Image (cartoon, rainbow, N blue to C red; front, side, top):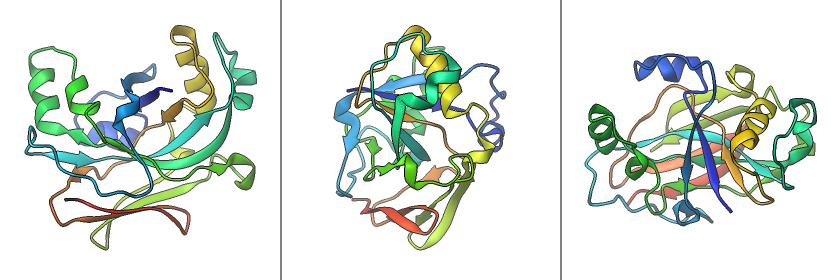
Length: 203
């Protein structure tokens, strides 16, 4: 399986990083070795002094798709969860400044904690899902899928024009404003509505 992540998919987040609001989805990939499951502890890597949290709604692809038409795209994902796109912001800034790809800042081991996944049929309105992240008891990020720039269906259709989607692939659909650094001793809790799905420590 692969992890496809969408950058700058909430206007306020694009603005907080001084990035233009995209006209097409901005995508990058994380390998399967980035996944961290079962709320295991996240260990800060020694190659970065500034790792940031980015909480995101995650969707799971349920069948193979290539050149998926947008009107059929809702049948290509079956479950929703929560994930964190950990980003080595110092590495990212260094690579961006040199005009280089910033995969090292995004794709490192365990940079993608993922919660359990919930059948999308359990959500009365896919585009009114509240999600949030607390750091050591204080809410630092809050978003609602109503504010996505590119919908889940738009993302699936766009990505599948270039990359074949396969059953089990995960799509990180973008983070709202409020990203910030994590430090040893922090405790992260991620929620969809009032359901706590992420609950782990930074070591």
